[in-house]
Length: 327
Image (cartoon, rainbow, N blue to C red):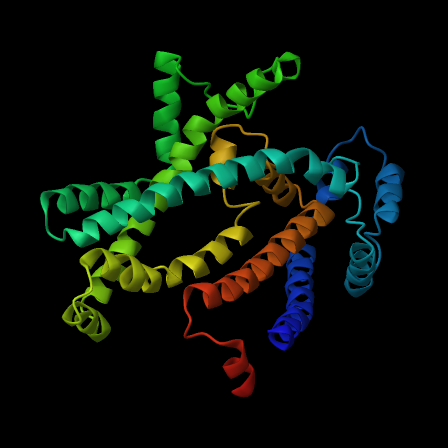
């Protein structure tokens, strides 16, 4: 396992270099930059803009700028945002908590409901429950997130039951610890429903399809022929094999942790990383965009590695010694 882990970590280095260089190239080749907007303002002197460009290194060749950025990133310095004039790490640090809370809560909500419902409908195929829940699943998958967000915000506006925007209330800092927790949960209800609806529907259908496919496997016929109780067949043989794709999906979800809710954050005015990254792309804030690319790529690669390692716990057929021997 140690050799396999070392090889996978070593493979991440060229991948990260390739991803970051291509991203830096695309951003740099985009028409205009952050200073193009400033040049259209007659109240800003050209000398001032030229000095700002020199400070942020915009006059250097593309490759030199990338190498300088990479060198700073290796020393945990993500640079200065040209739009906000503050350290990129501080900007991300101020927003990351809201995004992580939203992402983890919505994932917990989605997975804790989707998997049991998927198992239930798969064990009763073509029943009324299966048909009703499958219809709701297709409806949830076809409903755009932004449209559902608008519908829920309208309902919240009419009823006053939930806040219609923001991650916390204006008086959040003055609340007690329990009050802060309740305020957070109250602001999470609508975004979690929006993010969880489509995800829960697709995961439920995936679990249903996996279990139905497993039901026809030869090893299950053998297990039932040996007289094993149906409960043991389902829990030990069906579920264990049906969960393999979900372990892989969990690794991909880690990559979406920071930016996966960007659209919902923008529609519902949540102070998270998604809206920050969207603003950075619109204003061509190179160092802020590159920081999001670097963090997202790193989380995706580590998530995939963690998922592959977790598969060995779920599926005993996967053996690192055989994988290394087959190379």
